[in-house]
Image (cartoon, rainbow over all chains, first blue to last red; front, side):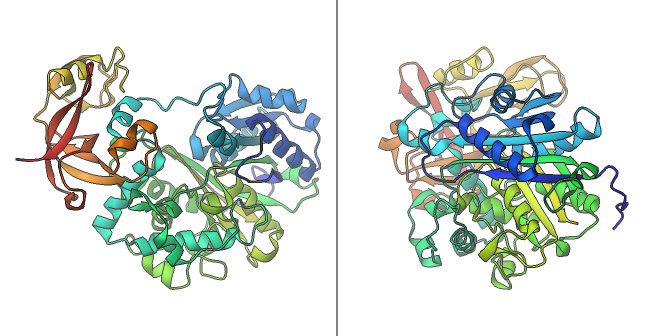
Length: 389
Length: 129
């Protein structure tokens, strides 16, 4: 390990909060975000007065002006630093790097990030009252029938199958394993296990994707609090260090993304491992952004857990389930716990490192890779290594 | 339906004349899509609209078996593809007049304009004759 052992210039996650992940909560995105934030404060043993940095993410439904200040106001916080991220599913992990950067720069000392969305409630009740976030340049996609995320990701999966011989069974193994993990998580939207046969029998949505290749539509919220290690030492929870944190952004549209069988993750991975002073073998759990099964496959390759085009060997030999060589998404992920924009990938990693995961606890977990992906096929990417000290 | 703006209007107007054209930077010769005021290669604002051959190959495709918008119900199943144009530009389009089970990656295709309403022609793609 190259990292100095002093506590200077080291940062930690000291509190986490979640609300129930479910199809419908019958409340607003803002209320969900406030509840998770409040729980994170309790978890960290902090009060609103202790927080001087507030970060959040733009809600897709009812996007709102000055949203970070709506969050701060709702919690009675008058921060020195506030910002609303706009990186889609990369936002929660990217927020860790914004928080670390802001503390390093002296802008603030303790940063709260919270995000909540009532996507499930909105989906079932018709168009949101105040509209949805504009996708941008959609005239060159939607009139041709490329509507929604599954079709765009399916274009990548099809090309990967063509180039590397990737199979439906391999994508299915990811869905089955993730669902098993959700079955051990009481805060999962769907907890009934599935078999590979169930996967293969699920209806084709956008060929080659079946319904069970796609993440859920959920109401959720999640929050976490970042501060310096010096401050973390005085707080009640076990220390979870941000051992490395990186962002890398790549494109905006599926037709400007280039090779869809790879991703910007391949550029970020070596940098992240170097910063953390570890190799892929040292990763005990991978919390990989899983908007689709194919998203997971791309990252297993990029982060060095299998050779390019050879994911089958990982899935068959040891696997990505609990007890396997690399447990992936122990909470059930976006595929089965529910679509949380990736914030619950972070809170799950913290729970694993604290040893709070009960039936799905991975023994002696020390280094956890957590990733986020925004836009289509990692237009935006952020990744971190969280470490138990 | 597309809602043309100041950048994209020349693209959609040309489609009505059954011409597929894109912005070409007159300083560095890069073709770009979608249309924008600045060349992302060299930041020049100088450009002209360049007609292309309308020929290309399928980079990848997906077959929709569920409609993500009510207006698409009538089209199911339909194929959406990324087309690599001869001029080294990639676009999203619909594949028409090819049986779904014979569409393949690498297949050569050519543009075919389809009237969607009185104001709109869309550049779809079909098999090369």
